[in-house]
Length: 163
Image (cartoon, rainbow, N blue to C red; front, side, top):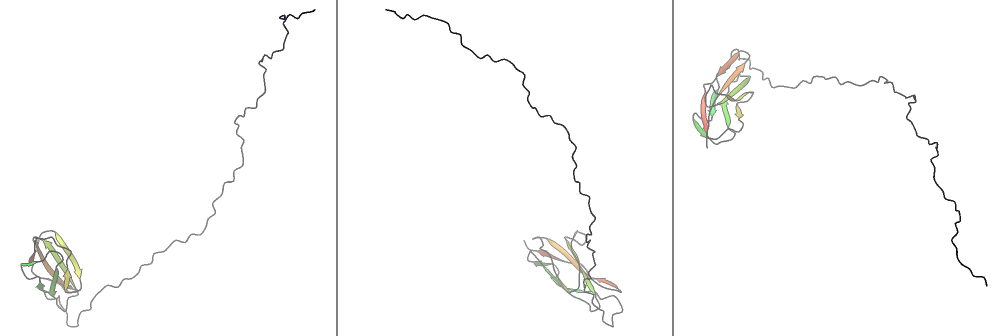
């Protein structure tokens, strides 16, 4: 009886061994291709330019009474009284004016008549309210009455603000 005995036999098989084969690949390269670009050309247009027109503003210029042929008389200072002690803050300066005065210049200084000005204001009435004044300080003031013929100054007057 035949018996089967396994035997080792070599059977050739095919195996794939890769080999380097040149292949053609498409690698993009940057090349400059001139193209036509539409560049806008400015077209002149009309632009309105505002023109400034001066506007007249009314100012107060009182007319002099018929009898005024000279500079005004010196004003009479009414308040505050000489060397008065007044509350700190804003102070009313009041005087009697001359009918021939067109305007008044109020000068207020801190400390003395040669010190720096706190106010140097032209007004057309016979009373003036100061800005807030420092507490515990002395101030001097006077009024200059003027018209087209000249001016007249009052003497300096002082007052102090309370602490």
